[in-house]
Each structure stands twice: as C-alpha cells, then as structure tokens.
Length: 393
Image (cartoon, rainbow, N blue to C red):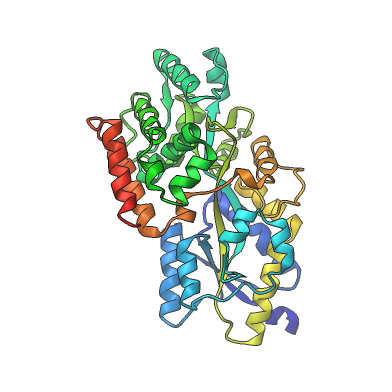
C-alpha cells in the first residue's frame, strides 16, 4: 500500500448503524477511500450511547480523532473545556453556504467546533394518502382542520395519530403545536429566550388546549411505542397521521414506498412556515501526529463536497447542510425542505440543539407528565412548563 493512503488512515466513531444511516455513511466512506484514505470504522449503536462513549474515551486519554455528535450545548461544553479542536479546513465558504442558524450554532468563539453532516427537520406531518382519500379528506393546514380530520378518521375505526409514547416523541408533537399556534417569533421567545411573558401568555395556554385536544386521537397502545413502530402503523393504513422527523423516510423507503407519494408529507399545521432543525456533526480531537492531522482535514473536505452531501442525505432522508446543493435526486419532501431553509427566517433550532441539557430534560418531563395525565388542565400544564423552564433562568 502506498504511503499516501497509509497516511490517511482514520478512525471514525459514530452511531450510524441502521439501514438508511449506514447507507448514508457509506457514501462518505467510499468517497474518502476513493481518494486514497483508509477508514477504520468504530460504530456504537444509539446516539446517546455513542456520545457518552466518545466523551469517556476523551476523558480516559484515548480520544477518537473523529466522532459523531449533535450540534448543541453538549458539544459547546466540550469545546469550552478544550476537549475538541476547531474543525480543520473550515473556512469562510462555510459561512456562505450553511444556513445562518446552523453556522452560528456550530461555532464556539468564532470557530466551527463541528463539521455538520446533515439537517433533519422535526416538524413533519406524514400521512397515509390512500386513507385520506378514502375519507375524502384534504391535507389539514390548520389545527382546527386537523381536529376535524382526526374525528372523521376515528369514526371510521382508524387511529388518527400514530404516536410513540416516549417523552421525546411527545415533545415533538407539542413543539409542532407551539409553532402552529404561536408562530416562529413565539417559538423563539419560548425556546431561545425562555421568556417568562411568553410562557405565561394566552398563546401558550392555547397551545396546551390544542395539545390536550389531541389526546383522544391516540390509541391505548401508544405508551412505550418506538417511533418506527408508529411509522409502520401509518404505512399499513392502521393510522392516518404521524408527527415525526424526516428520518422516518428511511423506513418508508425500506418498505418500498415513496415519501411524498403513498406516504405524503407536509409540515405540521402552522401560522407561518418554519423548519425545526436538528443537526448531526462530526467533531475532532487534537491529532496525535501529522498523518492523523492530514487525515482529519481530508475527511472534512470529502464530507463537505457537494456530490457527497447530495448522496449521503438522499440515503438518510435528511437534507444537505450546504444550501448550494442541487435538488436533483431528492424526494418531494426533501425538495420542499431545501427550498424552505434558504430563507433564514424559517430556520428554528430544535430544543435539543438550542437548550442546555438540563433545560431540555425538564421540558421533556413536563410535557410527558401533562400528556399522560388527562386530569391535568391546560392551565395546569402551562404552569408546570413555566415553572420547569424558569427554574433554570
């Protein structure tokens, strides 16, 4: 083997082990190897487990040179403690081609602390197109229309909402309602500013009223259900709608269905269009030698290539981090998202991306508590959320 290829050997730690995830990483790996690199795979199934394993290796003195993480406060904390280094090869071009919110979120003290891999959107409403047609239903554009549609589906003996009963899934649904009822500026007031006035406002109370009104349209089997099991309900025609991130498209494709066709996609009903973003990114630890440093920089160059970005995101169901990637080859849902995020006003951070870990955990706990206790009134739910979040101010 040539010296150049040997010099490019690189251990890459990640959690991309499912079908669509593995296919997306394979695009990066193949391009890296085609350009003379040697890739040493270090998979750890599960995002939480993989993040914990990376941190443990760093603290234990055996840091992975490249590891997958999520853009957000936990990565910022690693940067603040000097445990990761600025992304090698990140330059002014990134500021031009990345959505502004992503560019800001991926930086610490003016330097990129992670090389973003993809952009996922959390506020999608997937639906069984044949079932809606059978019920003579149009795709709901408001929450009032959605409640009418849900009532009709329930009368037909169908489950209106396929929901996995886990706190993070309940929070996705709640945040879609918050955006839908209050709009983009209100969402930012709540989750970027933790604004006490917004948390105590009539708008937030209305969000809780709408959220509570969705409870009767979820089946009794929801508690503990995984998201992919809920997606299967949608694909079988047992349920009409699922509110889920665009990673659901991987399972939809694997079942031989086309996102945007048999399983339709629309952004959850909202006053104004917005995309609640969650971003995976690779982070880098200081290299042990010049060969590792060269390999790290080569990895970044390959991953940020426009063709590689197109291929990996088509495989994963996400959209490219670069706004200059052509839409050719993407499904209808992705094309809608790619067009939307080019307007910075539409870019919103997921709570996992924008809130410190303790605050995000308190949010999930409060929402799950309210959702799973029908005795709680919307007023009580609002007060529970207000107290939970303001405890961290």
